Image (cartoon, rainbow, N blue to C red; front, side, top):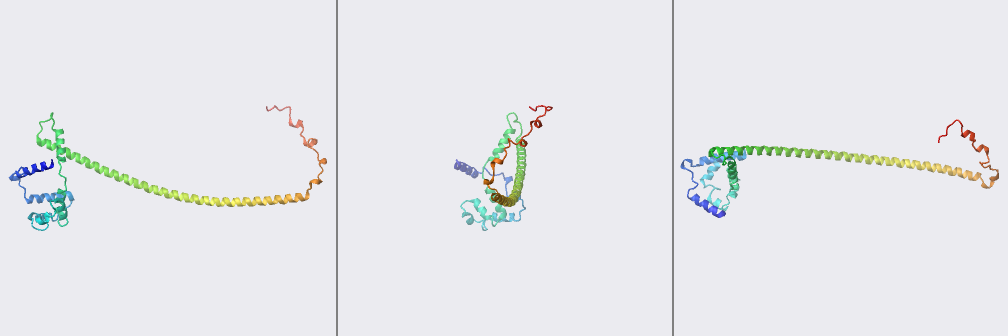
Length: 260
């Protein structure tokens, strides 16, 4: 299919199908004007020597624009101009970009689609020039809207990245504070453990001293008290001792109500 299209285009080209009218013949002066225009549009800079470089190319005899140099690239025109760009940066930039464009009809198809929405069966008396201008206006409005959306998206993305960076910085600070708090807590726990060990040692010393005193007292009682010397018959039982019992008249009063 591609070969058939190429053959048909070559036939039309040879038959002067694409030849412009004589009054619209393009000269090297016109091409130089377009080169200056596209160099400014694509690079945002003013050209310095693009016309001089274009003049060297138009002569076709000076290296690297001679046939011998061009034939070494075997019809790879884009690669050739990328190589020429090192010596002729301005014209090389423009031409390399032109030959780097993928040949397609997508833009024309979009234009036809836009014109189809404007020139309908119900509204078919519009002139072609007016329909074309309306389609261009719509395309320009769409392009500006997409450009604004792109700028807004970039600014939103930049703000999100900045917020994430700030959050990461805050997180790092919080982690540092948490680490410092953990270290302080560990030091406090270590200090409290040392104090508790000291208290335990003091308690142990007090208990040991108290136990020693008890042992000393117990040892003295064992030396002085002899169980064999105790006379059990001389000990009075509490049930027989009247002073050991409470009197009932002191426990109950008639003028007091029973609590239950």
